[in-house]
Length: 353
Image (cartoon, rainbow, N blue to C red; front, side, top):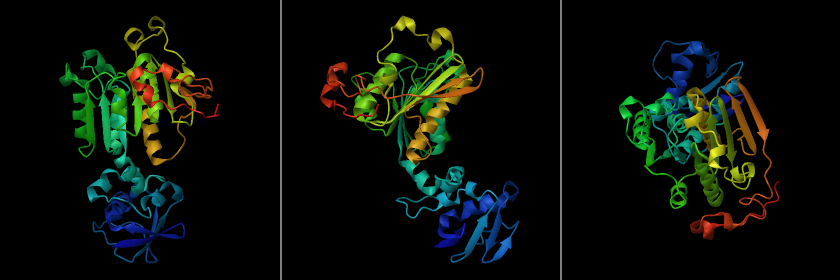
């Protein structure tokens, strides 16, 4: 059973499970919209009835002065491998109403698997928003326990979680937010011995760590296994973000060829971190992953986005791919890899610079 609807003169089929959400959007809160709804040629401005009166074969036309913003075109894909319950439709309605998302996009999110390395200032908002969006599987890697000093910025934890492993604290919050999401936990540091095995189970990786050693390790593992990756970093009121897509742009080593000496790097533990900025940049990492799975918009592949929290200035800087990068360049070599990775190395021959 379905309703034939007309949007901008083009007929589409509205599955019966969308009736409730269509009703909710257009009638329960009509003051929020400026829609003109016509059913079988008769215009309906508003109704107080709480019965879904659409029936099979009805011709329903609706629109507004901003019809392109309604998301109608994204709600009804031609085919969908799965189906949605009425509860799912209500839960993710604000996603599915967005053009380019719809039911098909929501299905893609539910099939997605995202690994978050670091359950701290960046990982907290990223994990919460990915879970809220309905990403099907989320992995969280962190070896630490919750400390009182974390709570100034790591919003996924609270005072009741002190001395608890961060991955367990995060898992409980995410399951409470969305019980349908599968949350895998790894109470460990990422190392050359375990990172390959961990990331190969996921489609997209978020680097939410706070040290260069981990960032280089994560980059190298993602380049080696062809996993897309969103890097981010925060210090004081400054933040930055970039996304790596395999063979389509620069990797982290194109920007930072070698690990800097420890004494030259200002860390959050010594320089401080503004918590609210973690929320902004971590949410951007989540958004990069969501756009990747929806195949919409432009990712920060080949760009570095710098955020100044004091001036509220955002600078998007072009990052050229380094043809001499010793990891993803023309002459990349397995010599830079840990010995246990070398058999996985495939030389890159891209001419993209």
